[in-house]
Length: 113
Image 1 (cartoon, rainbow, N blue to C red):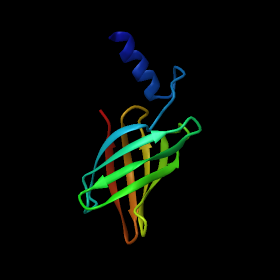
Image 2: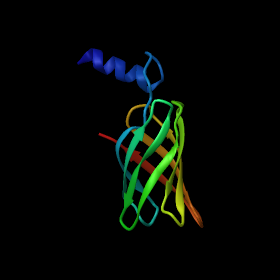
Image 3: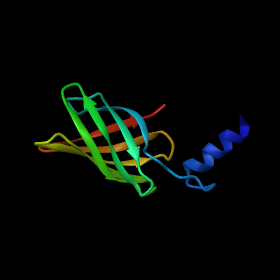
Image 4: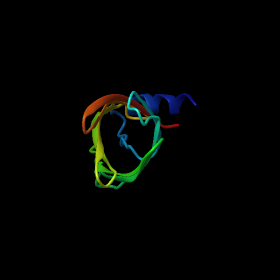
C-alpha cells in the first residue's frame, strides 16, 4: 500500500517514468448550463484522443491529442457546433480549466475514479 502511494505521488508530478493518460471514464461539473457531463476517453499510443461526451441535453464525440504535459486541450463535436476544453491535468484523476463554446466560456472540473 505504501509503495503504491509513493508511486502515485511521483507520477502526479511527472516522475518515476509514469505515463500520464486521459484515458478513462470522467465525470464533470461546470457553470455551463448543460452540466453535469460525462466523458469516456480512449488514448492511443501516439496520444490521439477519441471517445464520447454526454451532458443533460447533448451527445458528442471527443477528439484531440494529449502529449503527457500538465496542460491538456481537446474538442467535443456535436456536428453543427462543439466545445473546447483547456485544462490542467494533475496526472492521475483531475482536470480543471475552461470550457469554451460559441458565445461564451465556463469553468469546469472533471474527475475519474
